[in-house]
Amino acid sequence: MPDLLSQIQLDLKNWATSANEKGWLNERAISAIDATTAATPGALFDQANRPLVVGFFGGTGVGKSTLMNRFAGEDVARASAERPTSREITLYVHESVSIAKLPDEFPLQRMRTQSHQNNQYRAVLWIDMPDFDSVEQSNRELVEQWMPHIDVIIYVVSPDRYRDDHGWRLLLEHGTQHAWVFVINHWDRGDERQRDDFRGMLHSAGLQNPHLFVTDSSDSPNQPHDNQSANSKDEFNSLRETINQLADQQLIEQLESRGVVQRINRIREVSDSLRAQFSTPEQLQQLNPLWQSSWQTCSTELHESVEWKIPAIAAHYANQEQSLLGSLYARIRGREAPTDSPSAELQSALENLLDDTFYDRAHETVDAFSQQATSSGIALAAIQQPLDNAKPEWPNRARMLMQTAIEQSLAAPGTPLQRQLHRVLGWLCWLLPLAAMGWIGFRVINVFRLGANDPAAYLSSNFAIHSLLLLGLAWLVPTVLFIKLKPSREKAAARGVRHGVQQVINHIDEQTQKVLQHLTTDQQQRINELDNIMTSGVQVDDGALPEALQRMLIQEPPSVPVTGVRATTHS
Ligand SMILES: Nc1nc2c(ncn2[C@@H]2O[C@H](COP(=O)(O)OP(=O)(O)O)[C@@H](O)[C@H]2O)c(=O)[nH]1
Ligand SMILES: [Mg+2]
Image 1 (cartoon, rainbow, N blue to C red):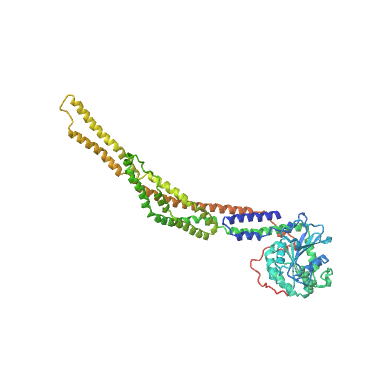
Image 2: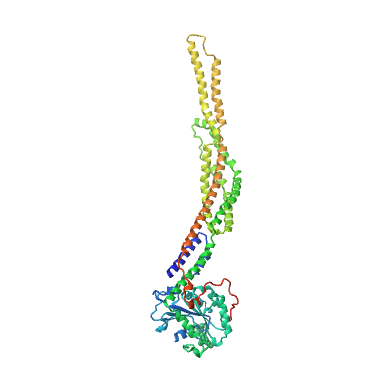
C-alpha cells in the first residue's frame, strides 16, 4: 500500500512536470504535489507486524515529555521547565522492534531511541516530539516531517493554552490522516468549562465525540500515577487503556489502509485542482472560429499591405518580355535569350514583398489570438509555445510558395482562351505563308504548263508583285497578331504574386489550425493519463472500524475555517 501511494505521487509528479514543460501547468502545480505526502507509519518498518505509532504533539511546556514518561514509567524523555524543552525526537520502543526504513531526510542526530523490555508496550512505538510552536524553525520542521509517520496523535494542551493557532492549523490540515486523542494536561490548574470549550472546538473540527482526557501530572511527573482514585482530576489510566486497545494488529492494518486512502484523497484533491486548470474539449473547439474571424481580418490587411508592391515586381517580368521580343535579333547575333530565372534585382523585390512588417502583422494577430484563447481556460503558455515554434518556419516556406506560384503562373499566362488563340496564331504564322506559297506555286506551274503550247501565256510583273504582296501579308498579319495577342507575362507575374501571397496566408492559417488541433488531442491525452494515474481501487469503510477508533477520526475537514481560535501569548 505505501508503494501504491508513492507510485501515485511519483506518477502525478511526472505527469505535472511534463504538462508544465508544455505550458499547460505552472510551477505551483508541481509544488502542490510536493506538498502532499506519501509517507505512512508503515513505511518505517519492513516487517509485516508493525507496532502502533503513537506521537505526543503539542505546544511548549504542555507536558508531552512528562506524559510520555508516565506511560513509560521511567524517565525516557527530557521533561523540564526550560523552553523549548525538547529539541529532539525521542522514540520509546520495544527492543524487538526495528525501525528499518527511516527516510533519508530525517536528521538522525536529532533522534533518540530508548528501547525497553516492557511487554505491555510491545506493540506501541511512542514518539515524543518537539513543540510544534517552537521558536526554532528546525523544531517545527521536525514535527512536520514526523507527523505523516504517526498513527495516533495524542494532542496535548494545557488549560490556558488549548486555543493555540498553530496546533489548530496542523490539526485541520492533517486531521483526516491520523487518529486523534486529546489530553488537557496541567489539569491541576484546569476548569470544567475549559474542557467543554475545548470539546466544542473539536466538534467544530469534525470530531463528533472525541476522546478527551484531562491529566494532572504535577505530583511526580516521572512516576506512573497508577491509582486514579488518588487523583480524581487525572484520567491518565483511561488514556492508557484507550491507547492499549488500539495496539491490535488488525486495527493497525486498518489504520494504515485508512491513512493511505486519506493521503490518496489528498493527492486527488490536488489532481482535481490541476485538472481544473485544463480547459474542456468544448472550450478548445471554440478556439477555431475565434481564430478564423481574427485571421480573416488580418488576411485582408496583409493583402492590402503588399498590393502596392506587386506592379513593380510584375514590371520586372515585363522587361524580360520586351527582351524576349528581341530574341529573334539576339538569336541572329548568337546571343542567348533571357530565361525565367529571376535577376538579383527581382529576387530582392520578392524578398521585400513579404518584409518584416508583413510578418509582424501576422505575429501580432497570432499573439492577440493566444491572449484571447486564455479566456476559454487554456493556459497562455500552452498555446503560445507551439505557435511561437511555428513562426520561424513561415518565411522559408513563404519563399518557396511564392516562387512556385509565380513560376506556375508564368508557365500558363493569360486565360485558356487567350492561350488557345495564341497557339492557333502561331500555327497560322507558318500555315498562311505556306498556303500563299502553294497558291503562287500552283499559278506558276499552271502558266508554265500552258506556256508549252501557248507562247503568249507568261506571268506578268504584276503577278510577281501581287505574289510578293500576298506572301508578305500571309506572314505579316498572323505574325503581328501572334506578337500582339501573346498573353502578358506582366499580368501573369502579378497574378502569380497575388496567388503566392494568398498561399502564404493560407499556410499560416493551416499551421495555426494544426496547432489548435494538436492542443485538443494533447489535452485529451493528458486528461486521460491523469485519470489513469488517479484510478486506484483502494477503499476503506470507516464504519467497519471499532467505535473507540471511529471517535478518533475526522472524516471531512470543516469546509469553513473555524472561528474563535486566537493565538495565545506563551507565558
Ligand atoms: N503543574 C503541573 N506541571 C506539569 C504538569 N505536567 C508537566 N508539568 C511540568 O511542566 C514542565 C514542562 O513539561 P514537559 O513535559 O517538559 O513539557 P513539553 O515541552 O510539552 O515536553 C515540566 O517542568 C513539568 O514538570 C502538570 O500536569 N501540572
Ligand atoms: Mg518535551
